[in-house]
Length: 189
Image (cartoon, rainbow, N blue to C red; front, side, top):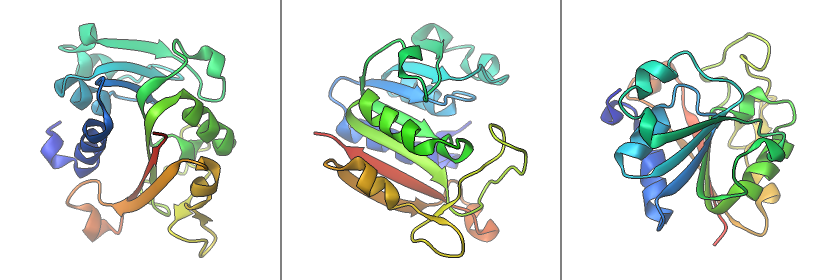
């Protein structure tokens, strides 16, 4: 995957680079390791976690797996993580799959030393109608409208830390498809 083709991943990498001094990141919900791959290419020491290993992991990471520590971990169980915290924590496309997303968010904050970067689909973008954990059970918008949850609920959950949210395209064709993501940045220091 060319990072230039994925606006979303490029933005995540840029946000990590802007806040990092140690160049260390914990990725929660690594999936196919696309984000991890680009963080490693930007000289990050990446610890990747997911509740199971994605089938595309081996293919995508074949040239980089020696640079990546991969662990099975459940964001609802902090004790399953191999570290207590990391400077940068990245969690993309995970919270929409979890019934207890507020607990997951709090655990992400606990794991974060400096900056937490979260991405969730805007409204029903990229929705998989399968039941969770494959499909989505949470849907957010920039306000509580039309049955969507208000993304700003995470601002309250983030207190006393700095909170920022932005609706972004993930790739050029998203505009035509009326799809987008919500990027959340929480700074602890």
